[in-house]
Length: 346
Length: 165
Image 1 (cartoon, each protein chain N blue to C red):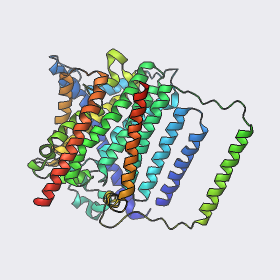
Image 2: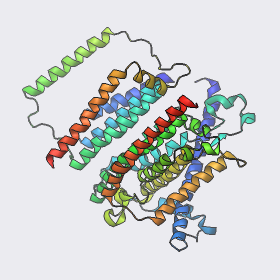
Image 3: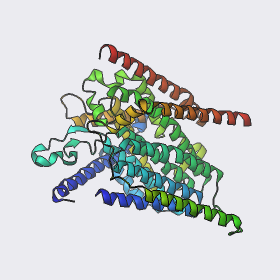
Image 4: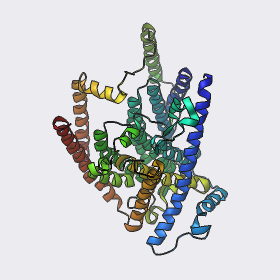
């Protein structure tokens, strides 16, 4: 490697670490947000003892998880049992690298000519030209973590939870990718940076041009990450805690972290695909992005506080017999209208 | 840098492919097969074929291998037992055929002079666009035939399930 590459490469590492730190902090506070909001929805207070408004609660939780006794059940298939939580966390965190959270970082004066190297000055770790495919690829690998965690515990509840999770993820991934196709058709690119830049006016936001796609994405996304009303992978009245049953201490903590990273990632993806990402007047782009992201995080928590859990067979039926056909219909109509528009006004 | 990546990927891919054959627990075999698929996706990225790499991950490493894993988990096959009579006539026949195939492949490979590593980059066009254009112009007929085949497979599965219930 030649000398000119070393410093930019180091700076990229710094940038990645900063983003990772930010994401992990937001994930920690997403747990607090969930508990507080659920508390208010259920007319109780939620955690408010550690620090003002319970703001230090995530730290206390983290310390608790780290200090708990690490139990590895004797019947577990050890290597797989240990790797499963790691797969979940890695696959939940990696996709954040292709989400554009701001336009540019405004560091031209500091970085000088280095700014162009490795896209150091852009508000995204890596503008992959197949970004959305990368997200689907990584998230389909993430399903293995849950599946293997359930299997390797050698416990019937864990296995059932893992299998349910796997089946649900595979089924809803189809609906999820179909719901995005409309946006991709209109934007004409698989890169998330291009998709955000195509939404530079409010009326160009894809939530208005693809309302059906937006709804499908919200529903299929909630099912994909296993949020209520689709949280059958861990429904306590049937499966104890599903695939997490035999996990304790920080291994459980990793699953928990993966879950909330998924929640935030889904919110970030909805924001990027349908709400113009960081686009917005006056306020700095990153603020707009975070605001929209937490709006959706709040929405998913609100849904959890409002709706009961569905029955498993109905979830599967709904995915295959309702979401999938509607998604196909949406893609066909979008393609048709867009072609006519291109031939006449475009 | 690329050469280094090539060798790392080769070790991972070939190594895990060997483990697929050697290990006796089916779940481990599937896991190493997934690793092989991921390694192959890495090779596609080295060739600047990002689209193919992602499809490799989504279709093979993701969808297909999940189904393998599902079946093995639900059938709960814990160990593949080695056959009791290890070296009878079938074993020798199998070994002979395997070596013959290996020799044949070796002869064919030796005959080919590989061109220098060419990347799939065409100026000003993304990989995805290129694949789509080729699919819908040059290779339209094979593409349609393949989709009809897949449709036939889907209908076949539905018919098979109907008969049993």
